Length: 253
Image 1 (cartoon, rainbow, N blue to C red):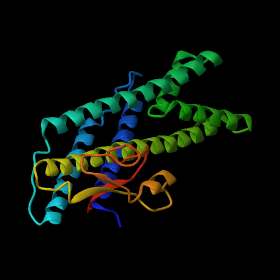
Image 2 (image 1 turned 45 degrees about the horizontal axis):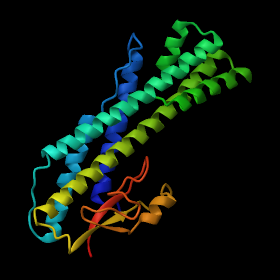
Image 3 (image 1 turned 30 degrees about the horizontal axis):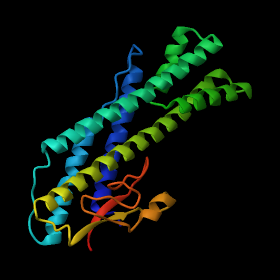
Image 4 (image 1 turned 90 degrees about the horizontal axis):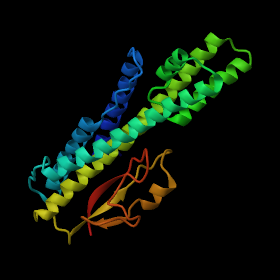
C-alpha cells in the first residue's frame, strides 16, 4: 500500500517530469540555441505545501483533533526558494555541459557550426554521457550499413528515451525531496507548538518494497529518529539518493 506522503510525491514527480519534457520540446522548437533554464521552483513549492497539508491532516487524525499551521512561513518559503534555485542551477549546468560535448565533438570531427546547432537541438535536456551515447549509437548504426536518414531517426528515438529517463529522475528526486521536507516541517511545527509530543512520538523510515527498491533503503526501513533529529545514516530523512521513493511516518515510541 502506498502511504499518503509517497502518493503525493509520485503525483508531483509525474507533473515535474512532464514539465521538464515540455520544456525540452519547446526549446527544441526555438530558432536559436540560447537555452532558457528549466525552473521547477513553483512545482517544488506546490509539492512541499501539498505534503505539509496532508501531514497535518494525518497528525490531526493521530491525536484526535484538527491541526493547522502556516505552511507558508518565512522558513518554509525560504527553503523552497533556496532549494529550487539550487536545482535550477544544477539542471542548467547539465544542459550546458551537454552542449559543450556536442561542440567539442564538432571541433574534433570538423562539423560545421550550422550542423552543430542542429545536433544541439536534438540533445537539449540530456546529460553529457547521454549525448555521447546517442552520438555513438548513431555512428555505430551508420558503420554497420544503416543509411544516414534511418540512423538519425533511430538515434532521435533513443535520445527521447534517455530524455524521458532523465525527466523521470528529476521528477522523482525533486518531488520526493520537496514532499519529504514539507512532511518534516509540518511534523516539527506540530511538535514545536506542543501539539505532538516528542517524548511520545518519533519518525520511522518507510521504504517502498518492490523490484525497484535498493539495498541502502531496505537497510533503513523501520529505523527511527526523534522528531527534529536524524536517522542512523545521519540524515533528517529521505530521499537517500536520486530516484529514492522512501518517506517517513509518525509512530509511537
